[in-house]
Image: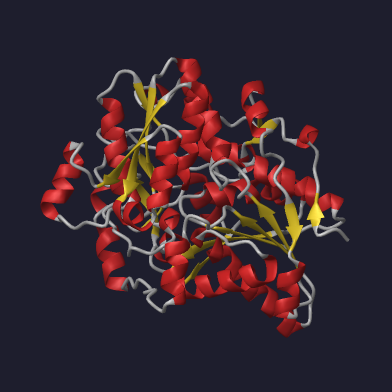
Length: 453
């Protein structure tokens, strides 16, 4: 068989898939941060254009992709799927391994799938600029690219540890026309507060989100955009899984297991939600496994409860698996996975036992990444190595048990701007972050007063 499974431009999905329509248990409603009452859509208008707000609360199964957005997708979509024959040979496994490669987009990751859509809807609404946060820089790069297309200004707050570790991601955002600031910064009241308390703060996605939201609500011409977590963001990413279903059918195969890295949920949801549709409506039994770092284990060690999506407490309260909005993860190199909470949709699916979650240590992930580089010739982003480590675990389990299973994973982006991370691994300077049960209990307990009566 061909190693690459091809699709034509005509096979780019025409609709986003909304898993809310098929979930057996709908998520609890988001709550107003002040009144603790269910949030009404109009209260989100200072942050988002109306089209995105309607997508956020929609239960419609399929939502049409605007023609203008689909035309831009055609610059890099459909993305290729490959059979990882080299990795299979290296592992000497009977498992069949496939990967969907999202690293060919202009930003080098899956993030433009939602960035282009969000920028389009903001342009239509009359916004002049968008503020956002970014961890490793992939989301910030994607939004900077999308804003340039639609003539919008872009202001990015980049988690300080990634700002320092990944300088060329900042340059790439600047090249697309964005202004990029390390977070916590002195540009916002909340950033100055954090710096006063912890001058050497490594930052977090929660802090960066607070800064971006603060800037957006103070500017009548600005909106805020998020790269993960929220329902509409996960919705836009489902073009990945829809393409993957067609590609698997062309290969004459279907996955038994799907694996994806997990930060807030966009990567995982993008590839798994369309397959979960088959589980929920067609009686299939495909395992969907989310992989998070052991240093930020909200799915595997956090608690399901209401919490803020940001550190300052400016967002609605969301029902999710969380480590507490004050949680500051260790400064690992997979910056896109350093988020304290999980998306509402993913959290409900995990709570209902419809998906699985595991965690991986940073050093183990980079070793898996090196195996992939040697066998497949692509340098994966540090986030993607978390999926690769779990794929290897599953493939070796197949070898031990003498069974053949089909495994699909989302190679969400390349690591060509992450060579400092690989240098740290190769030189033996990579340090795994540890988080104690006591620290998690204390951080989660900080949300006790946020729970509805």
